[in-house]
Picture 1: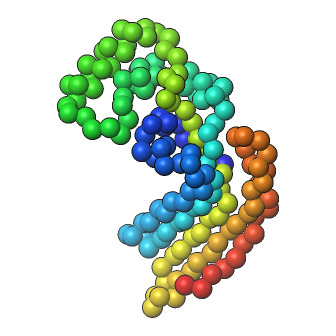
Picture 2 (picture 1 turned 90 degrees about the horizontal axis):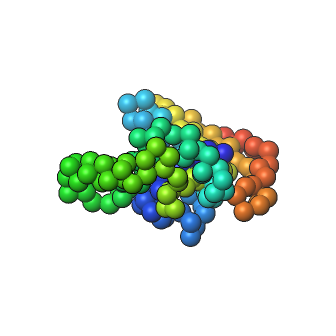
Picture 3 (picture 1 turned 180 degrees about the vertical axis):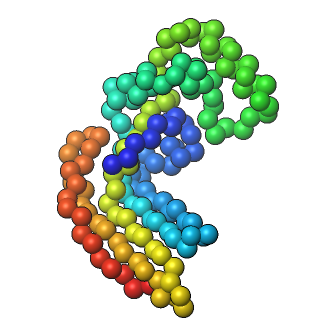
Amino acid sequence: MSSSSPTTTAARATNSPANSRVAGVLHWDSMSRQVRLEGRVVFCPPEESDAYFSSRAIDSRIGAWASLQSQPLDSRATLLKRVAIEAARHGTAPTRPPHWGGYHFWLEAVELWCEGAFRVHDRARWTRALEPSGPHAFAPGPWQATRLYP
């Protein structure tokens, strides 16, 4: 499981709640390597988001209130003005904004690819089952490893 804490209105966040299945690929062309991750994403419990938010630096908490994350911004000056307004509004103890929360990424599959000469690549895939165990969690089964043809 991995955690992330974007705002719930950012592009990556608005794509997730309707479909809890997600995937991502990390490709390193210069190293001739690739990793593919697949799994499920669920919202973190609010108390976990609150705890993480309050552990962040004060300026980061103010920035969370000021940012309209991933929305077009006409100038840096506009952002800095919003930061100043939110700093004055919230003082030294800003609470978590309602649009800010975390996600857990529960891995179901990991695939590794290493380039080989003449397309004789190395590929392997690890998979496991995830059984729901509450609104914010899964009970993962054991990993199963499989070698794949290129």
